[in-house]
Length: 269
Length: 286
View (spheres, rainbow over the protein chains, first blue to last red):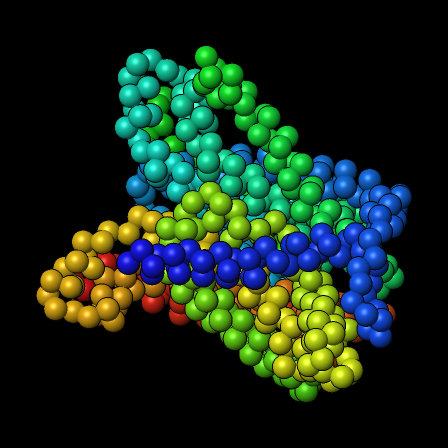
């Protein structure tokens, strides 16, 4: 039995290393080494050129800010819509609830390309095409269904008893939301924020259609790079795509500290 | 006046409904654009579309890639989750298994390119170890007609997603049913079929529908790793949409509407199967 479980542990770490960890380590190493030559003997030439080229690319900084802006707004809108819809689906019984469930899944299922092509003309008429606001709207489509799902599950596991209790103790809706719902939903909020930000960061084709090339996010810079830049620079750029959400995550964690009862210093004393 | 419970629920759902208008409008507008020729209603665009070999080639190719990639991701994801639930559930396991989620699809696609193309890492290693004599001896695995590179990319990105969807079921699994099956003399297969499958099937189906529709119509990965012929349906559509020739725009809309219809049919079958299963489950008379 002991022997078996050791094999299991080993095989788990072997599989995750090969499938998930190795590719990332490979990218990191690649971003610091010159491309390998076939004829020469195996030798790694370390270089910082990949990173210096990437960081000196003047579009990178502005594209990163544009991605952060769009991602930030996307996250806020997702939280507003996801929290309210999630709560309704978790606590209320009403006719047509199962239809609702399916309806909120549909934006994930139908082709984003079709939806983006469909709203393109309307966005041009409304003056939203080629604007970051238009891109924000189209990025809502692949993100909102996930937010509703995650936050709904969050509310379900919270249970309605604790909310009823606070109401009977005299808390108003806002108090209850701020001191009970938000702190206790922290894990669900965290996943929602992280997932929606990453999804927004990953959109190329719909950003290209609605943004018309004027809204330059990181994905919009990455694609043209694929043809021109060396693999060392591209590897660095690929890592950058993971660094931006991590940076965003750290900022969010800092903000989450300001929720009631969440101060890390309070726990220690 | 106090709101009734039902009205409160609808009020809370209002923002989500407002959001739904956007994708619904998009789809209807695409449908509208595909049905109008010179300002009049006509299905001639569809007749034109169905007469194009390129469309059929792309459609069947995309279907094949999407089905294979979805089934492989679901299969491996399920196997991985049920074997390693306790490990994945730890923080370290979660972090490791969900790393690919940190990256966009196209970054993972580029990674597959770096690893698997003829001048890629694996070919290089095989050459250094003397397994192959030249890089041309390495099989063409990316931008290939069989779509190997695309399928591999999707598996790398979607297996963690499948794990994410299945993990809650396996961590909260009620093992009493398994015990019951064993007490009644069932073997491991019985225990899987009767005590596990009914719970995971709806989630597996939902995940499968999401994956299939996404892979079927996604643009980024085929752009990076697809072959020039046959091309995935999204690439063909995009070319038509942005071709200098405006007469091909309606074709682009019609191609995407056809794709949507296929997805709609598959999703409908999936969801009706799922609802029946769920209904039986709550009735408890499986």
